[in-house]
Length: 95
Length: 309
Image (cartoon, rainbow over all chains, first blue to last red; front, side, top):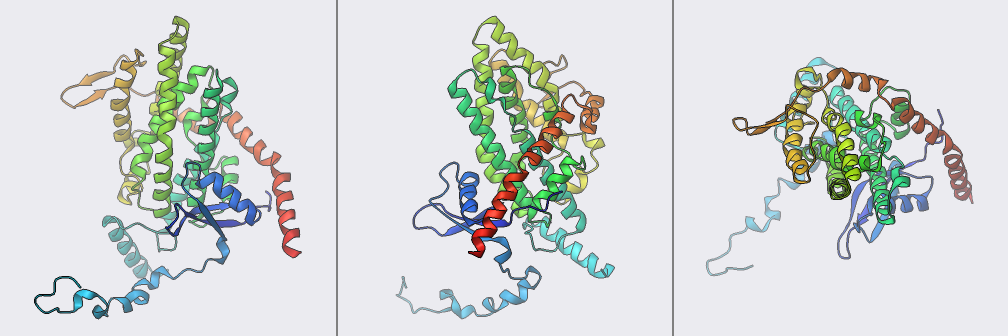
């Protein structure tokens, strides 16, 4: 068995001007320019994109899903961050 | 791991599944769920790659050839989306491929049948890709996120494959007696193997029950097979083809077509490695990997050299 496996890259694609790049999957390539070429061939055969980012998978740092509840909890206990928390006087319809 | 903790995690896992919350790569999952997915997704990926056969050389026109090459390119892409999904489960693509070459994992039994004529390309597109779509559409809602997302992409692309096959067969059926006979012959050979693509009957399918509970699969093999027969019979009738099953008949009370018994001996023989082309197909994969070795090596050497500069 060979040990020449190419590194893994994560692929992000902007589908059209004005939208974010979005993760679409991964692929293997020997270097960045090959990763971009392969991403074009694999993920944009039917005009799915106008811009591609590739990032070595090993460089992605992710939050820990098992700590999800505690980690994201602070955003749940501050209801006053949402506009619906506030009472508006009668007569104000749009604000 | 402590069995109490294990039980608790498994219970929470099943609750998520029951609520149709997708499982994502870093989430806790039972080892057997992970293994089942690796087996199913890699088997699916291998099927896409083994199915990339160079039939383009037989295409009767430039249009047909261009279409077929686009289809083969899609299949390479589908294989890659699926290998990419497998890699999120902690196995490398190369190990997965080596397992195929070592005969440890399977691929769709259909690719172990030879393609003899141009009409076979039509029959394969229509019946084989048709059966694959029947299998794949429900997998867009499978419980594992990366697999479901790969399937969404695949299904969008796959319907062109079925249509191109049906177009080939339909055109042959509008042709000379010889062309009609060629189409009928291809359908005669590919009908039963297409039905076998859905796998063993529910009574003999050892993985189905657990896979349905985990919502990896959404329908049983027999349910999907019935859906395929119901969808395909009218398509055959419309263009004047006879499906090679004397027992095939509309059953008013069931609201489905009845069909004859599948030759399960043949199925198990082919799955077990004794189909007409098993050896040839695997040898082609091993050769492709070996012949590409120097390219992979050279590309890596080039990348390393340019990194240090």
